[in-house]
Image (cartoon, helix red, strand yellow):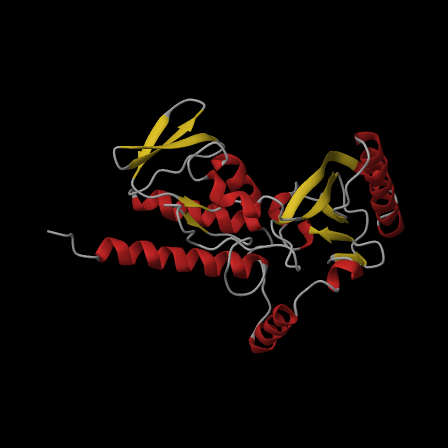
Length: 276
């Protein structure tokens, strides 16, 4: 889902590996009960049930420093000390967090990476206005609508409908904020027109609406000029994983493979005998 101009910048080996993996697959990627939230909730429950870990939700790390051989993470409310730190977040955010630290200069080459961003247009409807299909695509305008409730009925009250619209955004720079606002307004109108075409009457049935005009779906667009972050970086004591790191495949597959590589590294280091 990139523009023809960007497609010309995708290296040949990337395309080759993508189709190689695609043809080797025995089944398509699919959701369990139709929602990513189900997957992440199951993972969280499994971690909680182990009794060995603590998960901190919606607690942003403001800074990181090194003290006495440990790494101190500072949040708004507390400080925590760790022996090892793994960053599983967009490369640009890692560079921003580490910018004022001794390791910031090593992340500088990755600051200019461009990402793939979308506008997300979610609408919760009081009733099912139309359900001839669960997925709509307008490839010319890079617009897509998923009837999320068609595959996971637990997400809505009985008889309701949850539709999610996705509009891919270009990564052009704008002369000013007003110009960017006009562009986003145009994308919004196109999205609403697509809803009108396939879900007539939806406007009268809206119970909840949530619009995010800038959501990242790929932290590093896989084109020439962008650089994927290695899972280990010389001069930096941390580990890195995610779709913007070096790994196998694209998007979720790259995130998974880089995370698995990092996990192997950490386990190998923990099993090494202590030096006398």
